[in-house]
Each structure stands twice: as C-alpha cells, then as structure tokens.
Length: 86
Image (spheres, rainbow, N blue to C red):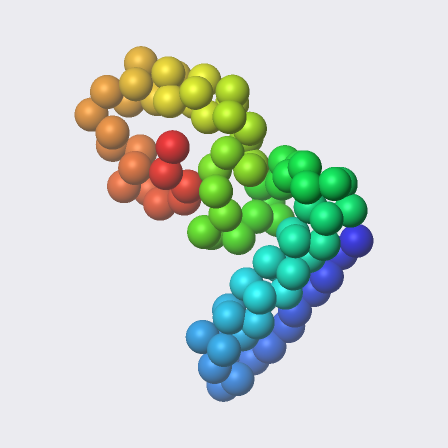
C-alpha cells in the first residue's frame, strides 16, 4: 500500500503533519490488529520521525547498532546529524 500526501506551503504544514501522523498511527494499529497484536518491523523510509527505533530495526538490531555506534563514534558526533536516536 502506498499513500501519498501533497500540499503547498500555504496550506500550513503543522496541520498536515498532524494528519500524516494520525493516519500513519491508524494504519500501524490496523496492521498490528491484523497480525494478532504482533508489531511488525517498519521500513525505515516509511517510518514517522517519532516512531520507536525498535519498530524499525528490531530489538536485536538496536542492540547491534548501539554496539557499533559506541565503537565507531565514542563521542556521539553523529547524534548531531538528526534522525532516530539509538
């Protein structure tokens, strides 16, 4: 399923962001219900900015990402770039 939202700058992005978030949450709740309460992983490009990292990479994936981040970025410089916080 692909859902696309388009608006111009004059439309007010805050209201549209709220609409995106609400519809995304409804879809997430529906797929969880369809899968008997099991939360499936989310493709990173489709996840909302406030989506839990574990839903994107899985609990084991988050553990591995933390281990790698601690090894290659001990001063946490990459956290300044934005994105999900691991």
